Image (cartoon, rainbow, N blue to C red; front, side):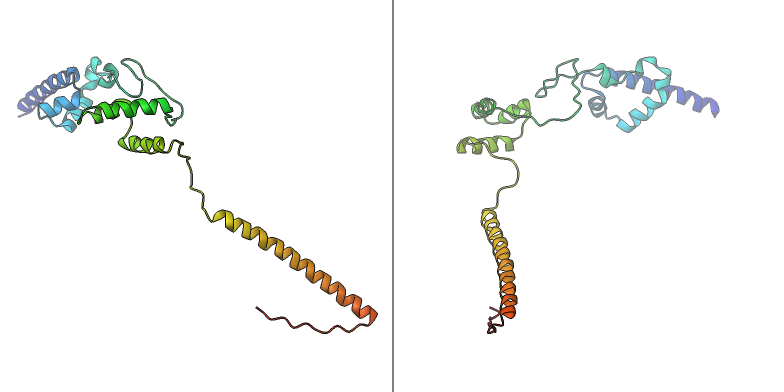
Length: 194
């Protein structure tokens, strides 16, 4: 029994060594290889982890061996770009016009390829068309409230009125004291609460 299981284990390991070597050399990558030959990807990586210590060539990851050419971000084969902080891409008016023209000239079904090549979304195209129709750039941030100016004026007017009221009450108090000193009786003024 032990002889059979040991032989089976060695055969299984040899099989997976062959599969892993073929998958690592496959031009479209490990995922495409597993999909094409109907191999379980979790099973592939389980055997890869088990066997990688025995094979020095497997120490380098496939992604480090193979650098794919990328478009849109300006990264070419063998070149990597690392930015310390992500920055928002900004397009000049000329770039926007160039991209819009390329999208308009592209035949049906190819417009998506232009967008992917430029690294933008269809929402950018819609937004840029609206901006160019207005001929003024859209300002970012919250939109101003049309009533905010009126509210601000009314609040300033109320503050002035409250200051004037305080001043008027002080003057009335002084007048009351002066009239008491001179012995002049003032008639009380009845004011409505309106």
